Structures are given as structure tokens and as C-alpha cells.
Length: 162
Length: 405
Image (tube, rainbow over all chains, first blue to last red; front, side, top):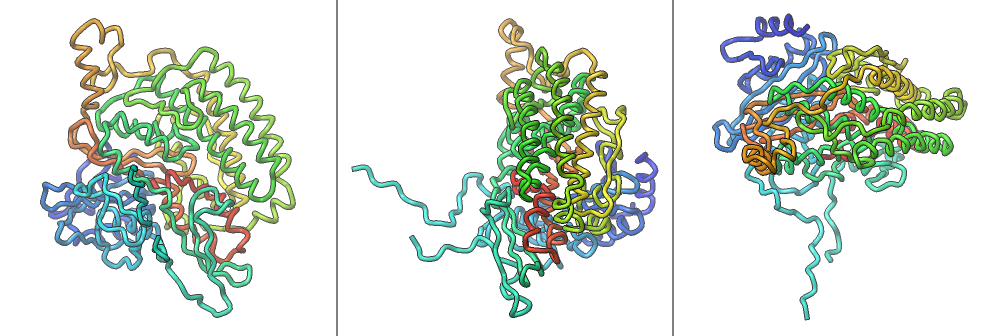
């Protein structure tokens, strides 16, 4: 069922800087950040990927560029998923926002922004969502220590033992 | 103590659009919202003009915590995402890891997972419908539904040892097979389910008060629902039969006979009815699965993920090492990434797992339906009545554990 759409994606969207592969049965598009918005627009408008499922990032601190930004889309008509993956550097962790295409991108980009510090250009509502105002750092980056605590209220010191 | 505490959120608006409007804050710890959620609403008398929904009060760093556990020992955390249907979380996560490892589960395990997923779905829908009815004042219906849910919880406790958070899935199989007499009790529960849910149908379906409170309240259109990422019962209540169990059959769903109930216009009444009908379909599926259940082991015999039999651990050095390595280092999952989605009670529950080839995950990301649904919740709340915020919110069935992770 998913084979014809995979061929279509390869034919229509594959190019010298867009690499199409298949991983565990899912079509994966690897592309540079500059091509993201145009490719996703074609996925949505021409190939029917109307449901924006998810965006997240993967941190590879030893690698340059450091972050993968990973998107998943689903086509409710063809009943198939596609993964779009792009790489951004630590110095400029920015991709274009998809809020113009999908409403659901608003919340999910906010989460990815606070957790990984990915900047979604054009999304003007990147307030913290799972964390709180004033939280310093990006907790899902590998260099954020798991045990670091950031208190909103002053910590009560235990009474010194007499 | 300092005089003022910093506000943990920054609302999208501080000033009302009209001087006659008032901005009210609902939550995060409001007795009527079952879940810690904060809604900042601008109201014009009783009418809601706009809302800003904040979640995150239950955030506990699930994804960060997973990275310092082995693939196996994080299963109890997975339970605590959607704690109303923890088994579905278990199985979706296990399947994601099994996909990376290239493991095919045994036939008995496949049917049992399907059966238990449907059983959990019934428990989850019972919770959701019961709570949203109680919010409208229907205490009797709440007690009927929670009674049958409790039968299911106790029944699952016989199987897994826990009432709510089961930790019953294993990579490559299940913790144990069905205990003796489990299927016999299941037969009794079918009867009790029909009796109690039948009473609720009789009390609620054509109840004038209920219809007045729910018809045309919290309406969402199909186009909006898809644009805002809605899946599951909410998307189906708008009239489209989109169900992963039918569309991309996994586990044993391809062999089952079931219908996908849909609503008419996506209001609160439709969401109530879709959930009630889905429970009936789930029970229908469970009946079929009981007859189809094949004999055999529930866990694959694969030394990469399954512990060797205890007798061999004591008897031979290879099994002892195998046991030790699996506990200390965890199952070695080949490098790569996989996204596996199951139709959970709330919608598409996706696990995106990334492995760097070791026994600990490089990343576990959850595509939580509740979180996505909160992103579009303002569509259903804006323009409605202040008093309808709570029932509409109840019909979305936001589960804090899954939404905030």
C-alpha cells in the first residue's frame, strides 16, 4: 500500500540535496534546512500529507552539525507516514516554522524550542510550555545535567543540628 | 520568604480586548479540571472570548530520565504517561524497540497484546465518560461506569499484580501468561459490562438535560481537527473514520471484525457517543480474540532481550553471563531510529526511539495525543459559555501524565 507513494516521493522530491531512503518501512527525507519549508509545502499540498504528527530534535554533541530536527507527517488519505529530517548547527540552530501550514506546529515547536533551543524562524509564540518562565538552559540537550535543579521558590535550609 | 513569587507562566494576553471584558484564571489546581491545567480566559459576561491554555504542571522530565536507564528498566516510566490505559503505552513502546531490533513477537503474545489493548481502551473510555458525566452532575452514571472500571482494574491486577500502572510489557513479549481462570472471569465481566453500560445508555443517551448541555457545545470541524493534529475519538467525532487500527493494521487488528464509529458534527455529545460505541466495539473484539487465542509461549526465545530460564542461570555459566549482561547493560539495540504509533484511547500515541547501538536509549520521544490536543483546545472553548469549559475540557480527555511528560 505504501510502495507507490514511496516511489512518488522519491520521484517528485528526491534531488541532489534531498536524500530519500527507507528506514524500517518508513520513507525518510534528509534535506538541508533551507529546503525544509518548500518540501513540506509540497508534501502537504501535492502529496496529501495533511496531518502534522510531531517535531522533535536529536542531540549529537560530538557531531557537526550538532542537531537533527525530525518531523513526522501522516497522510489521512494514503494512510502512510513520512519522516523529514534536517541538520542544524549549534551556532545557528534555526529552521523555518511550519505554523503557516499546520496549526498543530505551534505547540510542538514551542516544546522543541524549550527542550533543545531550536529556533523556529517565524513562530512568534515560543513561550515556555512544559517548563516555566525564567528556566535557564535546554534540559534535553546532552550537556544539561540530569540532576540540575532550578527552584522557583527559595529552598528551605534544614535547621542546623544542635 | 520573598514577598512575591515569580509567575511561572506568561499569558498570551494581559489586557482585555474590550473594557467590559474580564480576564479570569482557571486552574492549574481547580477541583473541576481533572488534571493540572491552567486556562487563562477572557470573558464577556458568561461568554468566552478567547483562551490561552497552559500545560506543563506535571512535567517530570520523562524523556530526560529515559536516557539514563536501560531499554528495559524504563518501562515503568512508560506506564505513567497515560495511566488510564497503561498497557497500550507499554505495548507501543515495546513494539518500537522490537522494530529496531528486528524481533517478531510470538503469535500468542500478538493476540494477547491486542486483547489487552482493547481491554485498556474500555477502561480508559469508561474513566473519561464517567468523569465528564459527573462534571455535568450525573453522579449515578459516574458510579455505574466506575464500578465496571474497577472490575476491570481488579481483573488486570490478577494478571499483572497492579491496578493502574502495570509494567506488564516486555521487549519481545509479556511479563507472564494469563493466570488460571482469567478468561472465565472475563466472561463474567462481559455480562456486567453490558448491564452497567446499558443502564448508562438508558439514563443519558436521550436525556434532555444532557443533550441541552452537550449538543452544539465545543464543536470542531474536520478540517480544523486535522489542521490541529487531532486524532482518535475527537477526530472521529467530526465524522471521519480515521482509525490506525483499520488504516495501518498492527498487532492482530487486521484479522478482526470491527466498525469505526463516527460522530456527526464533532460536539461534546458526539464525543460521548463515539466513546460509548467504541467500548462496545472493543468488547466485540475481545470476544473474537478470546476464541482466536493460540497456545504457545508469550515471549520470544531471543537471548538479546529475553532473560534465560532461571534454572539455566544457576546451572551454566553462559546463561549466568547472559542474565547479568541483560540486567546490567540492557538489551543491545542496533543503532538507528524508529517511529511506531498505536491507536491509544486518546489518539495516535507515537514512540520515536533513537539508539546509538548500546543498552541505553539515546532518545525516547513520545508523540502524546493529549499534548497535541491541548494545542487546539482553544478552538473548542472560544465562543462558548464559561460553564462549558469544564465539560468540553473533560470530553477532550487530557491526561496530565501524557500531556506534560
